[in-house]
Length: 493
Image (cartoon, rainbow, N blue to C red):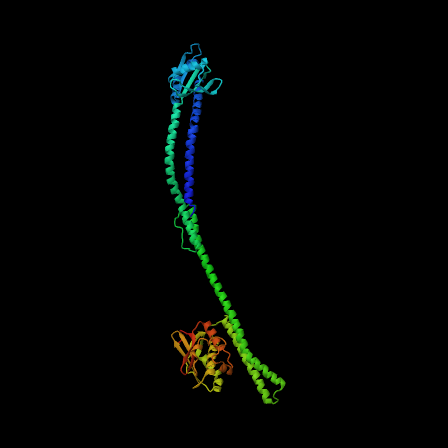
């Protein structure tokens, strides 16, 4: 830190203190004596007013007057003399070396001039002057004049004591200034440190907060404004941490949304490419055979019937593919509602096997299912039927060797395990993870032969994901087994 606030505060207040003490010393030297003389002038004037209140000259000889004036003179170190107005100018009253003062008064009355006299103020009834005594070489402040009784008076206050007081005062002030400056340096430095340390802590705290370190807390405490600022800093740190956490969460969600959008765009592109590829062949066949019918390439009825059957078969395949795509789209985007019901899985499997008996006979395949007792599960019955139908249809399309298809239902704890096994050629290991991807085909020629389009297993995956249940495929030496699990009924025996 190039400019320390603590040093700035210390130097400012120490300088201010030194300036005040120095200015006090200068003023004391330059003006204190004059101020003191002015005050003593007022004292002399007040004393004059006090003795001028006497109306009868006989009172000057009374004890009451003597006590009153003597106390005033003793208090203010005043020398006083009062003389009559006769030719002899006899002293009537005096206080403190009045005989010397009487001689001075006589000189004033007869008009003897003294070059050491400096007139300060001259009124109708009195004159105030500053005089240097020839004998003692000491300055004094004097007042003389005539009272209302016609008597003359003179009063004097020595100024040497004033100068001595000024000298002592300045000397004391010098020592006091030195000690005061030293003490002020210590106290002001301590106060500056006491004020600036919390500010320095707040500065470091703000720097740590700028670096997103919200564990930094103000610990100096205090109930003044700095303490309140520190408390607000702590609250702000907590608020900023929560806000940044919310922003990070929102940013993470936004990132997920962006990734999801990117994924959806990729899926859309892939979907359009796959659909275009899948529809290209049947559309070409339909177009070719339709043109053949139009041009009457074969006039016999049998050929025309064959052309019509090809067109109808390809149109049916396209219709089935579109239906499956619509079903898959609803499942993948969560637009299809999942209704969990309790039903007998054994009865459902029997109905699916019964509906595929004709196809099994055409394939010369044998379907084995030996379960007879009801097994209840919790799931969406229509979607489970779709899964079982896809598994059995897939098994019929790929059955080979002994041409056996075996369906099993087993209870495994709280789960019900359903499997469909078919004899035949196992799926290559590198294709096991890809068979659930829509439009993916292990053997494209064979898939085309039975009219498959690679969507069935994608529908199975989407359905099982919506159930949050496990599913999969297992290779054996003599065939392949597809399986899935459902929640069993805890009350069933």
